[in-house]
Amino acid sequence: MNAEFMEALKELEKERNIAIDVLIEAIEAALISAYKKNFGSSQNVRVEINRNTGEIRVFNRRNIVEEVEDPKLEVSLDEARKIKPNFEIGDILETEVTPRSFGRIAAQTAKQVVVQRIREAERTNIYEEYINRESDIVTGIVQRHEMKNVFIDLGKTEAVLMPTEQIPHEQYNQGDRIKTYIVEVKKTTKGPQIIVSRTHPGLLKRLFELEVPEIHDGIVELKSVAREAGARSKIAVYSKHENVDPVGACVGPKGMRVQTIVNELRGEKIDIVKWSPDPAVFVENSLSPAKVLSVKVNLEEKVAEVVVPDYQLSLAIGKEGQNARLAAKLTGWKIDIKSESQVEENNN
View (cartoon, rainbow, N blue to C red):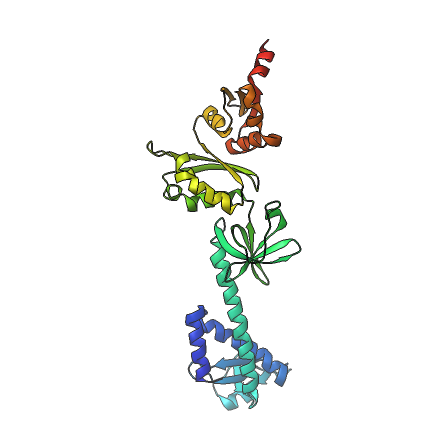
């Protein structure tokens, strides 16, 4: 190695944010192994790299003892004092043993260490970048399919969309550009693994935060989300500002804001309802688009008894109970829906 190599390490320090001392210490440790492998495995050696010139020196280290048992690791006090008179028992005698042919091995070893450290640093940087983006949205390009997993190119790295996180019947074709929600970032031996989702309620929440400035600015609050991915979702919104309509803000002019999100989720229907601190009002709103006649709430058991007109019963319950199920998820209340005629029959 030479001064040019040291300059290259300094450039790496700036570009890749890898401390030069860390690189040199790693190279020195690797060179000890290389020396032992090629020139004597039983010796205790130290490798020193000059920080300015790149010159490499190898020193044999022997403990100074009264009686020598292993000449490769130990030296007598008398022998040591022939070199330096003030040596004492327990000191270490270092003798330079740098082989002439060590330069080529050193260069090759140093290159391997630097490449490995660069790879490790890149992995660490990617992990640190994406661990801070958990619960956020990323945009990527569908790259390939493996064992039902979909791999998405994020630029610096790739994310995996597992079958459980895929919207039923949604097609992911190579080259498609899609938004996904980062569920988890794991450290693995092969680098960071980024798990993303298309079904997580957080995806819907973040899409509204990105699309609706009033949510981003805190004027409108997104209180809760209930989602059956690929089919239908409900969100509850609220604003402390009397002159702001939270539902209207999310729908947008001519429905453009919500339509953008529906398009991103490939046709998933989205009901936007107004949140209320009054449970009865919130439950009523959550059953939208159905009209509600009355809501009776049991605060202790968190059960709401809802009465709807006869012609609204099927709409309130929804196809296969979907509307009622989503309303219950959105409010956190158990909702018992009855038609007007059913209530009259029970009362008679």
